[in-house]
Length: 143
Image (cartoon, rainbow, N blue to C red):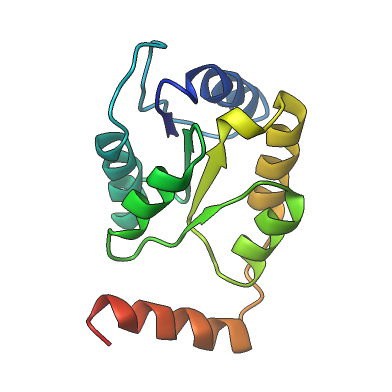
């Protein structure tokens, strides 16, 4: 899990709570509320997901838009920007998202908890959705 300065406080809370509930969590920064550039944080989370050191990743930013764009530039990453439990369920169930992006400026702590819980607890449906995810993966190779 990583977050920029906008996501620092919420990331810290979620890291603590997920660890306390038995999840293995790596806090990849930032570790202060001072302004940082988020792309490197996105790369660190996504690299760990892509190479198997992490099953899934979570990235937090102000709006989450830039983080989502940055994460989705990396092959093998399917990052979903989730504002509510419905989008969290769709991103996992239909899109097999392996990175959750949260808009820290738009969520309460309780909303973020619900989104993370839904996202972590929703299995990929497979079937027609697997076919679509394969088509998305093919786009990474240029078509």
